[in-house]
Length: 261
Image 1 (tube, rainbow, N blue to C red):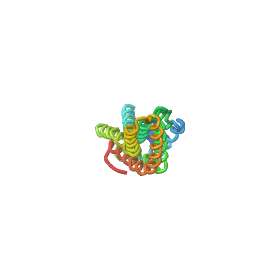
Image 2: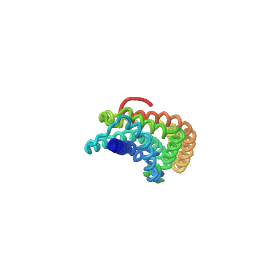
Image 3: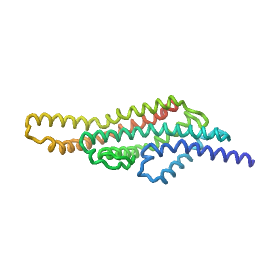
Image 4: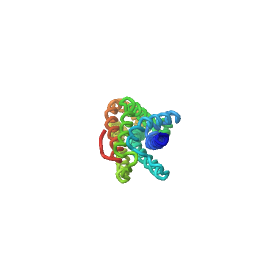
């Protein structure tokens, strides 16, 4: 009886560590879980709590081997799976940040870059605005539930003792990276189009009235036009973000095994 309890305890403990290895990359790479606004201690506590919740699902019918080499192999495999899934989510927020960077460059606000509290990098005003709006929309649509549900689904696609296809995972991560620029253009397109039309209008005005100092007049006008279009376009970001989050979760799962939530 004591041998059975000891084996069960070892299986549960090692299994929990392996689950934590798959969950942890989410808190290192994917906003808002990895945001510097969240204290490290809080991130650790939440990661452990999620691992505790997923452990019964992951360990159901699984007997963890006692061989130390085999356990290390499983731990590395779990980290790789977690990294692949977290990268898919991180690419969504990278696209939102890139959209803000495009707008900053076009308006001219990138000259006053500050530290973005979401990813702790230097970024412009619009990048920070879009990053914060992205986090807000993520919370409103229960994005964390989508992500945790997707993480739980990975155990159906790749059980604890199985190994994923590295070629498929690499292809899925590559697709996620390729989609960053396209997604950023989708978000920033209305503002970029309005600013390009503003530049064209000022080009025509400079031809008609060459005495006018276009640089002195154009800069504040472009800021006003950009902010107005941003204010008009942001309400439509919620639907786009919802669809992209679903796509990101499915992309992360596609690297492990095809399937939708």
